[in-house]
Length: 367
Image (cartoon, rainbow, N blue to C red; front, side):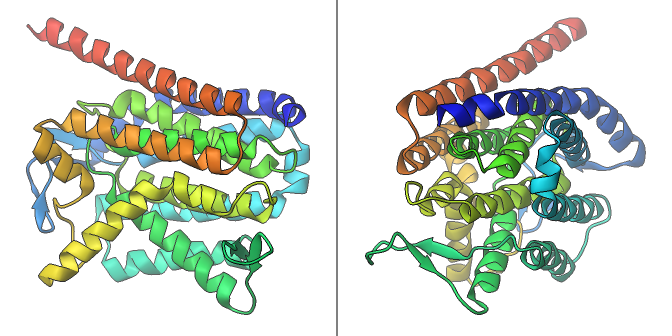
C-alpha cells in the first residue's frame, strides 16, 4: 500500500492542483459568457412543482468550467504518467466520452430545456458507452456465500451497469439544490474513493479520474459556496454524477477480497437516499418522481433548521461520515483514512473562507 501511494502521489498532486486552478480560473469567464447569452436562473422563479430558493439572477452553466478543468487535469496527468493511456486507454476514453455527452446534454437543458425522455435517452447512451467498452458491473459482494463475490452472467451486468449509471447521474442532479451542496459532496466523495483506490498499484485510471474530479469540484466550490456566483446546472451535475458512477464501477473491476464492492456504494449513498425518499414521497401523493420540487433532504433540513448553510454543512458532514464508513469497509489504513478526512475538511473550509472573505470585501466596497 505504501508503495502504491508513493507511486501515484505526483500524479494525484499535479492532477488535483491542475483541475483546481483551472476551474478557479475559468469560472469567471464562463460566468461572463453565461450572462452574455442569458444562461441564468432567476431566484424565486417557478421550477416544476416548487420554486428556486436562491436570490437574484445567477448563471447556471458552471458545468462548462468544471468539465474544462477536468479534461485539462486528465491531459496533464497523462503527461506525468504516459503509461496510463496505454494501459487504460479504452476505460479513460469511454468515461471521458460519456462525461462529454452528459455535459453537452446538460448544457442544452440549462439553456433551452430538453424533454425528460430526451435527457433519459442521452443518459442511457452514455451508460451504453461504458458497457460496450467493458466498463460494467461484473460481480457484487456475496454476503451469504463462502466466496467474497457473486459473479454475474448473461445480460445481468449490462442491466445493472445501466441502472446504476443512469440512476446515480439523476440522483446527483437531484441533490444539486443549495449553494455549494453538490460541489462539496463531489469533493468529499471523490477524495474518499481516491483514498480507497490509491492503496492499489493497478488503479491508475480511477486514481487519475478521481484526482481530477476532486480538484474540479473543489475549484468550483470556491465560486459556488453561498452566496453562489454561479450554479453548476445540469451540465455540471450530470457530468459529475456520471463520472462518479463510472469510476465506482471502474474500481470494482480491479477489486480484491479485502475491499468489498459495497464500499463505493456506501461512499456515494447520500444522493441515492435522497432520490429514493423523493420518489417514494411523490408516488405516495400521485406525483411524477421526475418533476422538480422542494421535497429533497436539503429542503427538509433547510426548513427545519431555518438556514440554507446549516443544511449544507449537515449534509456535508453526513457525506463525510459515509465516506469514512466506506473507507473502513475497504480496510483503508487508519492513517490514510484520518489524513483523507482532515485534508477534506481543511481544503473545503479554506475555499469556503476564501469565498466568505470575497463576499465581505464586496459588501464593504458597496457600502
